[in-house]
Image 1 (cartoon, rainbow, N blue to C red):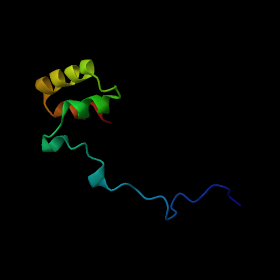
Image 2 (image 1 turned 45 degrees about the vertical axis):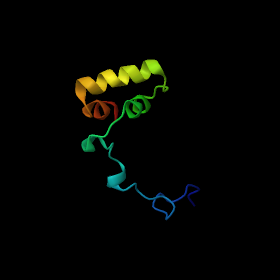
Image 3 (image 1 turned 90 degrees about the horizontal axis):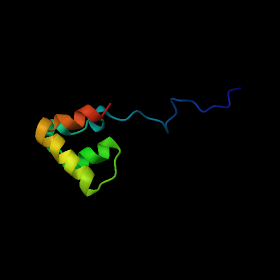
Length: 67
């Protein structure tokens, strides 16, 4: 008898693909989004960093941080 739960049980479902995208393709990426995606705290210094990245690379800056 296996003590581990079945991986295909009704409680465990795959996340739909439409929910796995960053949203960068829409072009609506804020400096705050970039800071959070980088794992940093939201503070003036990190927001300034994110604003520079967005100015340099646009929404693609977010895609570079996400797997």
